[in-house]
Each structure stands twice: as C-alpha cells, then as structure tokens.
Length: 102
Image 1 (cartoon, rainbow, N blue to C red):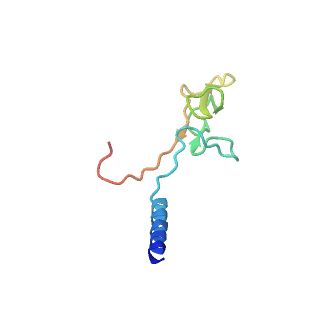
Image 2 (image 1 turned 60 degrees about the horizontal axis):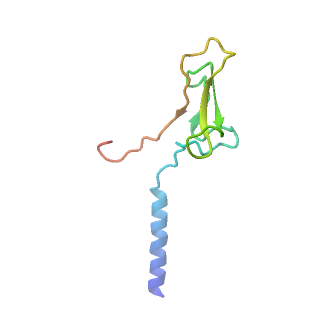
Image 3 (image 1 turned 90 degrees about the vertical axis):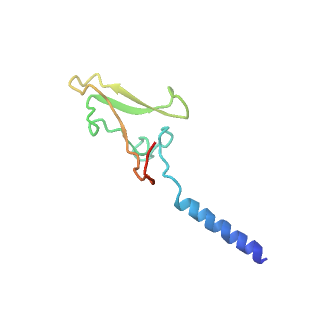
C-alpha cells in the first residue's frame, strides 16, 4: 500500500512539473480562432496596425495547405492609396534558455 501511494504521489508531482515547464501553445498553423474577434488567436490581422493600409486579411477555409484554415491577404481594390505590401503579425515569445540559438 505504501509503495502504491508513493508511486501515485510521484506520478502526480511529475505531471505538475511537466505542466509548469510546458512550452507556450503557438498558433503557427492557423487552427485556433478567437470566438470574439473571429480572427486567428495571437495573430494581428489589423492591416492599419501593421502598416498595410489598402489590404484585407481574413480566414480561408477553402484554399489551405493543411488543417482547417489558412490566412489570406488581398489588395483592397476600393483603396487606391494603400501601401505596397500587406502583412499580418504573430509575436513569438522570446524566452530562450541557453547560450546559443541555432
């Protein structure tokens, strides 16, 4: 009985420890959609905030490489004075450990 209890407690501690050191969940494949904003989680799709006036960004469920969704960026034909490039931003956490990044 003591051995089973010790094994259970050890398993619980390992489970908690792995959760504490788990990596952040990054939405790099466009699978998570924010139900409030209807945009991809962690992605800034506001074209004026990224300096991409004259472009429209959105979610595409028809043309995709893998998974359910992809990101589309298209020129807004109604805006003749927009920027030359359209871009969306996903900020990656910079919490590296160690001395080198390869």
